[in-house]
Amino acid sequence: MDHDWSPCKIIDYSAFLSEDDMDHRYGLLFDEFGPTQAFLEAQGFMAGGYTWHGIVESMIRAQDPAMGKELDFDPESSMFCVRSSNIDVLKLAHDCISRAIADEKILQKAIDTADPLIME
Image 1: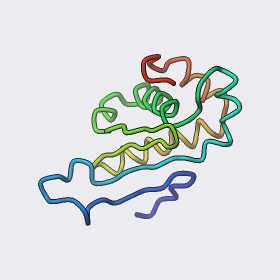
Image 2: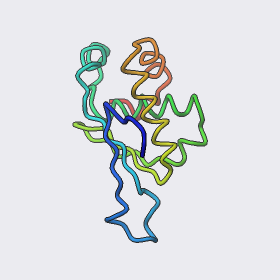
Image 3: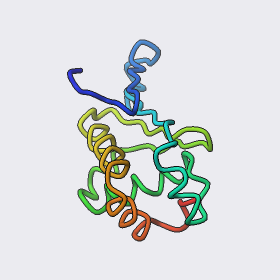
């Protein structure tokens, strides 16, 4: 996989899955919340995995809603994780995270359009 996944990590679960259970072959992990933590906390969010679930879901929904159906979000307070068998969809999720970290306007737009039931 020739792709720079930083600041995330990619996991290939294929060695641990049966052929019947390849729906979630890959996982994208993100837990380097520091660069955006103060910005998100100032808006009343916990700034962890649940917050990033809302941000990424919002950005993917705006870009390509069909792609969102191929993702299985599994956030926790200390990390954001999303799984899929489609590596291209995880590249899109990675791109969303990278863009949101790099540009507060993009991050704010994602927050403004996020599902409030997901954001924490």
